[in-house]
Image 1 (spheres, rainbow, N blue to C red):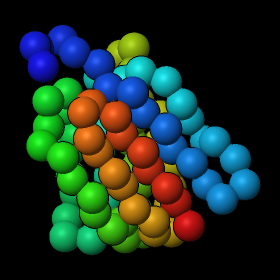
Image 2: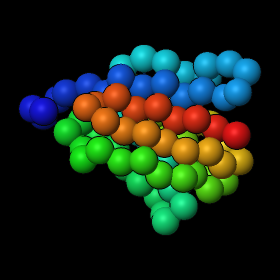
Image 3: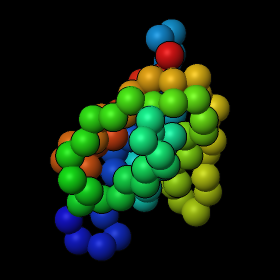
Length: 83
């Protein structure tokens, strides 16, 4: 994808959607270390360790402390599922 592209992002908990919309980037506490996801990133499925998910949109950053879960990224769509 060209520079300046957007991601479609959903951060979901078992009982509700925590964040949904377009973002320029997402960072997650993957089990193997911090992972940054930008438009055009290679597809990935990773477990999350306890830490902070950050969604970067419209010049602001939304933060969500998570106990764990997983992240799925494919075709500029990011789904973060938290425990």
